[in-house]
Amino acid sequence: MTSAALPPSSVTVRVPAKVNLELLVGAPREDGFHPLVTVYQAVGLCDDVTASRSPGWTLGVTVPDWIDPDAVPVTGDNIVDRAARLLAEHHGAELHAAVSVTKSIPVAGGMAGGSADAAAALVALDRLWDLDTSDDDLLRLAAELGSVVPFALVGGTALGTGRGELVEPVRDPATWWWVVVPSDAGLSTPAVYRRFDELTPDAPAEPEEARALLLALATRDPVILAGALHNDLEPAALDLRPDLADLLELGEQSGALRGLVSGSGPTCLFLAEDADAAREVAGRLSEEHDVVLVTNGPVAGAHVVTYA
Ligand code: C5P
Image (cartoon, rainbow, N blue to C red; front, side):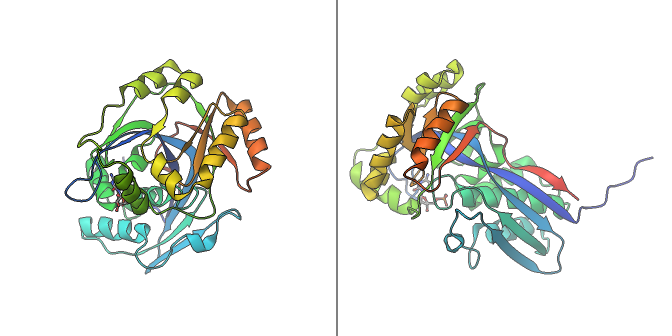
């Protein structure tokens, strides 16, 4: 005899940050978005989003001591509020839950922390409200919320096209070690794209393919991957934040195989040969930077860790 399981009273979903191993950007489309060819990788800096039963709707955020709580918008049009509304509207369900986000992904840093939280909220509320949303519908709702939200659902390593919202998993058999240096002051993603437009008046209508990067992943050799990493937004981010060039140089002098700006920045990433090398680079960067994190990828996308 089978019996239907009761819906949970609380669900926690863990969701990773992303890095762009390759980010190729074309000229703006008619809708203002830029066509992208990008290779995303999910790395082990994760936020946890917990959705619990509640008669009303509340959203709270907890940050570690190295994240400025004022940098996390919890009121107004937060992307987690929007995710919840969108899911509820899609099913004609009522918006009632207490959601809390425990952050470990650097904020406003080019690692898609807000997008990750939105993806996690979709999954957590789908389970809490027992909605059984199909994967296709979740991906479609995610794309409505933001270009990077679908990748946070998929995780691993994936090719992103369109405006970044079309994701297709790719083979990435190795574990890659990263040193991550967030920045106190964020950079606005639209401002970085605008500066890209000014600096790149001849951007192609469609970016090239990411074939060399995909081949580099398959070699499992960090020296080869280091040579293939590329971010078209980096010159724009460095133009807006020239100090980041010094940080990239310092990381490479400290033993990193390669430093690059993460997405639209200002977080900077350093690829290291292995875990020991990453810790060594991090140790040297810590002498000059308050927050230096070591992580690896690829890791899983948004997934349930507690269902109670
Ligand atoms: O899609 P998302 O909300 O994450 O995008 C944030 C902003 O980044 C957009 O409003 C747009 O200015 C810029 N963007 C873009 N082209 C993309 C993705 C983002 O111009 N492919």
